[in-house]
Image (cartoon, rainbow over all chains, first blue to last red; front, side):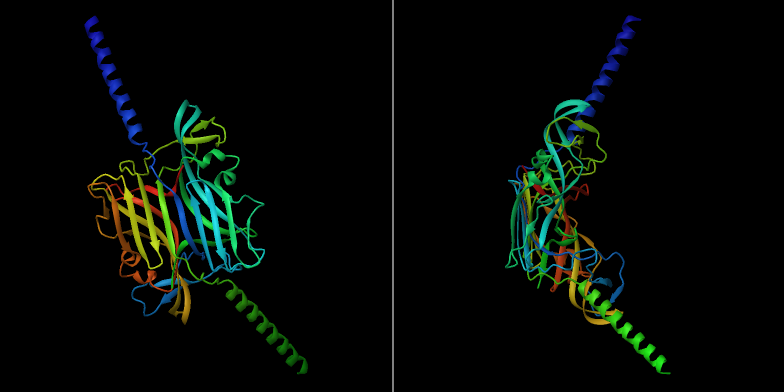
Length: 203
Length: 203
């Protein structure tokens, strides 16, 4: 009887340990490491256009284009600001730089970023633990923070630089870790409409 | 009779005025392309699963009160990566440089594009020299089944063209004159079909 009880305990222990090991391995395997290097985004911006969700035009004589499209519109997107070109940089130091021309004196712009941040070494309480890797909810920030904005100079140029930490305030510690840039656009600070998106122009 | 002619005149005047306002609105709602936009360059951070809703309480100061333990169930967890960098230039050429990948890893670049082309001929309604925005298109580059393959040193340094990725039925989307918005970009592990990297910064 005693021997049978011991063997049951042994089997249960083995099963428990195996399950624990498998779970631990699963959790470990599902938590990948950060890259060693990711220095950010360095892009020119093109004009943002309204989305064409269902085609209203048929193309003619264009075999290498989709058969339908929409007339270009800028109702949801910005259409009042001029723009010759704009260049945007988000650097590994957390600096956000904007340089553009072709605007009008007084135009005010902000960079809108949607970020998904994962940080190591985070202390959590429910469930309790320290040194955890935590992914935070996607956060959308505008840089610089309102009421500030990048303002166009008399010659139509916009030159500005701000800091990611300042944009993320009060959650300034989100500025370090593995920062995915889910979305990026340039907006008119006056009406919140998107002026430009990353891209290339083929002339 | 005189009154009737006067009424007709007023009605005609109103109609002309209304048409003028309408034309002005339509014209104002079509923003011009920028003069140039030369490249889209981004480094890649590791892609993580989104956190929604939060599942852990965070006590580290300077961070949001809630988050999720890092998970890579909906994103790829099998590929390793020291760094990766993507360049799309104004000639429609796309190049990927990656280091620290497993030998034989098969990688594709996924891009979500919104293309607006100028000088197009359309038939319904008929017209020429029109600006057309096409439906958003998601492409995977290169279109070959294997994608970019990492060499024995774990590196990828390969290039292709947007026209090639768009295929023959849509290759002209990448030809001049095109305003090409890159709405989203990511790296895909061909073997799992999951995203493993997104534009970003590691700090």
